[in-house]
Structures are given as structure tokens and as C-alpha cells.
Length: 77
Image: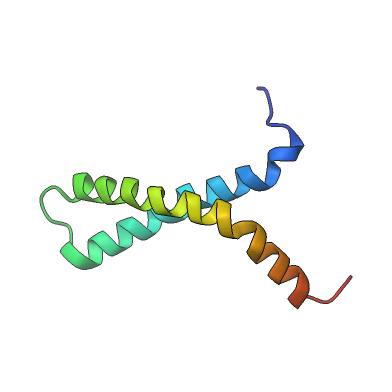
């Protein structure tokens, strides 16, 4: 299997985080709003796609800013 070049490590990490976190969060919020009703999976996946459209640009845009803030807030090794 061909691996992604190391220089894309941070972007790949943020993308995977966005994909997994929005899947879980959209499922939980859909369940809390509707319960397990007829069409739950369809509604959940529809909400998941909408969530990804917000999460991916947000993580890619704010990720470097948050990383700088964390570096500033943490003590050196």
C-alpha cells in the first residue's frame, strides 16, 4: 500500500478527525432529536454530509491557529 507523504501528515490527521467526529456527532444529535425512528439512517447520513461541509473547512482553516495557541499555552519540554 502506498503511503501519503509525511508533509501531509497534519492535513490528513485533521481530515480523518473531521470525518470520524462528524459521523459520531451527527449520529448522536440525530438520535437525540428524533430517536430511532423510521428513516433514521437516511436522515443521519444526510446530516453527516452537511456536517462535513462545515467541519472540513473549519478544521483546515482553524487547525494551524489552534496548534499555535496550544504551543503558546504549553511549557517547553
